Image (cartoon, rainbow, N blue to C red):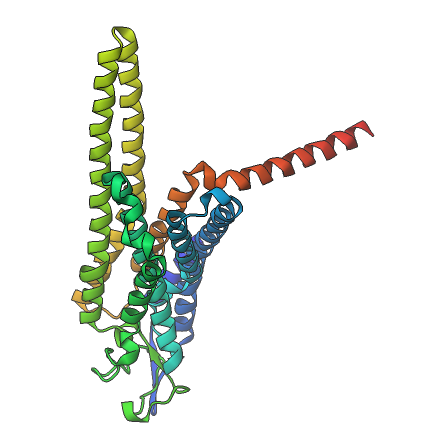
Length: 364
């Protein structure tokens, strides 16, 4: 990995073009730099993507094998796990959106719109799951009468259809294809014909700046993504505050019933449990959301300075930021023993068989 980073830095410093008739040709050094950037993305994202996919499969199988978990709340969580698994599949392709590549018109649209749709669908499912569990704690008496429980199909449509519609807006015309001269966005790109002469099979310089206008990016970041993250953080903080109040009520009841050391010991155990919960939630938020928030604002900074260079820092932040956010459903799922119990039982059976086979061989 260190060798790829060194070669990438040297390649980016030695970028040079050879002027030819009718366009520009990329030098071997530039080709090697682009390949090194792609290798760096794969080195970071492929192990993380594999872990996300396998962990989600384990949790999905755990919910599917336990009939007691076949209820509406867990169906919402299954939808989130499917979206997270799809995000894990698309994880290596999301940082590639920051690289300028030569693709056909249709391939360029798919390479940018489809990963963006999966990411927005994942975020929408995450908000729905947090909201459903938030209502369960804040208003438990009306929990079973929620509209999302009575109209489950409509709720699923709401968390999947709007992300698809919004992500597809560039395909319906909200793009930057006919904007300024993009011939230099790929140093190897030839001079392209006018927009009216483009076909689906024509190779052109594919850049996220051509697919997503700045207004689209600002709307997605500050109109959809950031409010969703703040909404999740607000609901989590509210739940912790309610939990703190309930813990105080329990301690007050213990003091009324018990006296002396028993009441103080019980209060100490409850305070310790609440502190552990608070620390776990805080660390999860810091580890999963802060890297993505940093990456999101770095992307906006790149738009403001209007740079066309592919930064190693930007690529690394994109890989870590998207990957850390995709870990959130894994944390929620693996923390529930009911979800992971079938996997643990299977591992225990395999371990017992392995030990039995080893003891038999030793006896022989």
